[in-house]
Length: 330
Image (cartoon, rainbow, N blue to C red; front, side, top):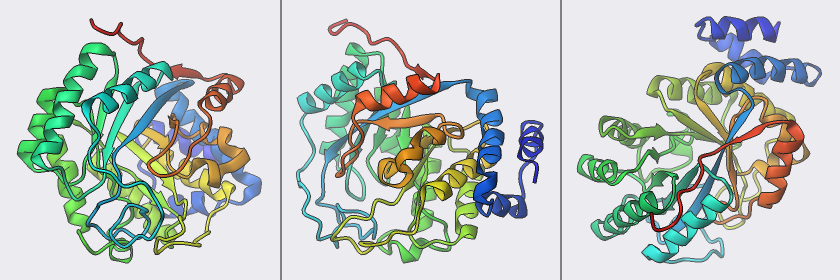
């Protein structure tokens, strides 16, 4: 397959079919660079050489009633992680200051649990107001399943984006969790959109899903019209049901990123959790398909040194797409 021709067809409005999508995932390693070149043609058309940086804060760790098989914070996990309830406002504001220092355009406030309590929502809402006054940061919240009135409160407070991942395909969902349904996740994404908040929804690759499952994920996110798509690669944590799972290699991860770019050409594709342990030395190549990464640590695992990420972008000749922080107190 001529990936450059397919890329041009996508830019002209073509939606790739399942055979073409499978062709991307089954692409021989010898064809990997031409495939990434095709993905880059699409990425460059919409985003040039700019890379969006995001920083995450684990605002509430563990103490979660859900039974998600990949998560160290779930009720069935035996992983030795820190467990604490919602951080106070000062701690969340300190995180925002660090995000601004790292030139991260988006600050992500993430809390474990099925959904936010009224008190937790109050803390987040009050903190967002302060963040908007002090820093020129976009704020993304990730608090679980939302009620419509909660989504409207977040919108009024200034939340720019809300993350709620579909995580896997509908057909594979029950192999990963049974404490909520795939429809619960889709409904939350639609609730976010109805409230006027930019929807962020992504996936975790490497959880024993099939290639057809991955194609279904990419297509379903296209249909959901998610503005931002985090592509996580499973970092199997000891003490979780998926402990010891190791299905991925760096070349396959690059093919997955290319698939998501071909399927969702104009959307922000973010290389997210598991980037360092799965892409390893091929991390820079991922940015020929994706246009966004996390800097700093993840929820319960360490990320790369922020200086190495900035150096990687510089070495690639890419630019950080960021906004200048507002002076504190203004």
